[in-house]
Amino acid sequence: MSITGADFISYERSQNMLNLLQVNNHRYERVPLSSALGHILAEDIVAVYNDPQFPTASMDGYAVKYEDLQKDELVVLGDNPAGHDERRVLSEGETIKTFTGSMMPEGSDTLIQIENVTFSDGKITIDEMVDRGNAVRPVGEGYRAGEILIEKGTKIGFVEIGVMAGLNCVMVKVALRPRVAVIATGSEILDLGENSDNPAQIRSSNNYTLAALFEQAGAEVIQLGTALDDRDAIMKTFENALESADILVSTGGVSVGDYDFVKDIIPRLGAEVVYKGVGIKPGRHILVAQCGHKFILALPGFAYSSTVTAILYVLPLIAKMLGKEKSYKTVVAKLQEDFKKRSRFTEFTACNVVVEDGEYFVNFEDKKVGSSAILTNMLHNSALMIASEDDKFLEAGSYVSVILLDEF
Image (tube, rainbow, N blue to C red; front, side, top):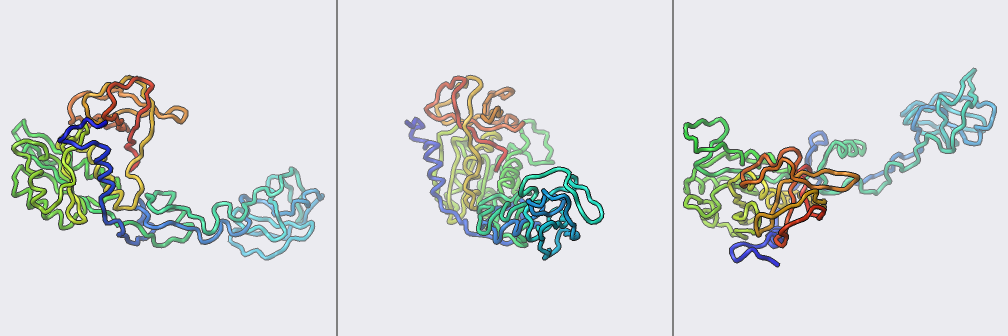
């Protein structure tokens, strides 16, 4: 049962509404394979032939007919180097020296490695037997023609590059990266390199944290830096950003203070507010708005809050625009210690995840308890544990859902 109250919608409802938003996800480009690393595939990669296309030697040795291994000696017809279009056909009592990657000669079914024979005067004798089919890669061992090797929506890594190179994919169809503009608002913040004698000012990290997060998730980022609490200036910055960005993300100015202008500016831009206020901790004052095919997300100003809400609400939009099925990975883990919730909302708590014998475990060692400003709690390969509205006190041994932060 939801207990978020009239001012906030539940986390589950907010995610359902986010999933229903229509995005422009049919944009793609073709890039050279050498430039495709980190991009998202916009089409399935399908094998057009078998690999290998013919029986192939997997080591250096002699291609033979298995039954001939019982003979006293075999006549060597010559060499069969890799890449050679071998056309000779083995007759009884014959062999051809065949090297790794070479086509097996017709009439052979087994390769006996060099160290298992003795060569003398153009003949070999068998010193140690091998099984039938030894060291021979059968047709289609790697993949079969028509098989989908890499699915659309896959983030291209080094293995995908190698497989596509083997398929002669010179150009690759990839999703066009969505453009995300990022700005931190607030007269109290200093951008990188700025100096001030006012000890009440704080160093901005939000716009850099989120820019890195969105780039890691596959977006192209427009870094707008910081903006003072000036209604007209913020309005103009937002208008300019929406001309080129698919998603505009701001931090700060979304709560209920006298200088929180962002929540008032967004409707003036002609954007429709999808929702403002979600029953989550941290970040309950988050605002999501849509302006045509573009989106505006106003996030809280505290570093931990803005990062968590960006993961929960911005990454799913980026994933949809890229054609990815999921924006992050969630696993089930067992608590190694008791956990007490601090609010009546759905909570997202930084935690440590360890894997033992294939099972995930969660603990909170060295995690500080305090405000939503402690970004350092997310260091050291941390994760986010989800405690639902209905959870109050979770005993050690309870199973919980955890968002992993190492795969976006």
